[in-house]
Length: 398
Ligand SMILES: *Cc1c(COP(=O)(O)O)cnc(C)c1O
Image 1 (cartoon, rainbow, N blue to C red):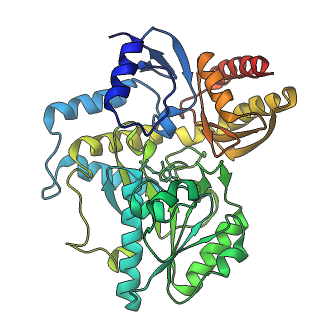
Image 2: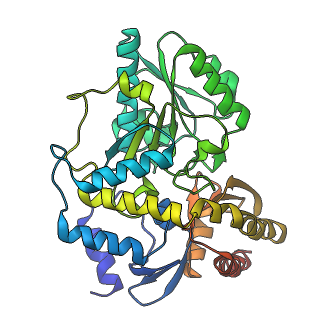
Image 3: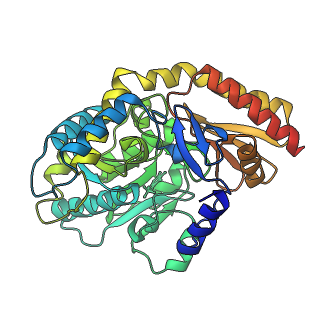
């Protein structure tokens, strides 16, 4: 098949829920992707924050290749070595006490919601639990995760969703306070909002929420599916704020490319929530994905990728700031570490499409933000290459 044929065959068979860019990726190496015509692309999207160690990393590949020949799957009825390795390493990295592995981010959110509900049921006998979520948040596409996602466009066609969810304004503590009542069982938020437009939590906001939760025995669920696993220059973004969640969700970079998510809880939550029979999954945390999680935790720690991100953050943001200085449609920048958003006044889709033509893979977030989520291995020469390409993009657009 050639490029056109791949696209045509896929479109004929796959349910049309994505308007895909006209590119057929074939393989990757380090920071670069290659399409079926052999064209090279610099990847500043990481498959939406997944490919944290880039493409075809030898150490990662060797671990997975080895596991392929040993054992792919056993179900959760039995133990296997990667379960022990992955859980020990992920729990340590997360700073939490216990983990449950899922197949995706949305399922991690589902588990977090069930855990919070069960906690209120056990500790307060509460069966009318309410959850406070944030406007312009994103937590996934399943019915439960959509119920706490603050985006009408994603939600409306699927009403009625799960009840008992109220929406506060992100970074507005009073709006959260006004929604708290005796039925509130959890506050759920992204430590750095991703899809909504790259908004880091204000320190006073997240600390204020922690206090509200402590004062009222409400659980704080931090969704770090996008911003966790080293992306902000910390293993998990919450660690930069000096607070700790009761429940933490992860996915995307957690498995470095294999489908795996997780929710982590503190000992207090573990003791008072899900028990045998309350929750389960066939695939979740199988030997193959656990081997990937263990490898990712090892690589992140050994190569100190959070430290590498911190060290290079300014070099990265300087590139974006120069773009803002030079080109009128680029007006502002927000972000933390290797999770950056460039606010533009021109259609963001045009920037992303034009970048692809110029061999640069980037993303959008919200309606007016160009989103950059490079692999965490990105170094100065990659930012130099990105600047050249992005400059060409804005020159061609103006
Ligand atoms: C991507 C994402 C999700 C959903 O993860 P899936 O694996 O797509 O289900 C949830 N929360 C945040 C913050 C995300 O970025």
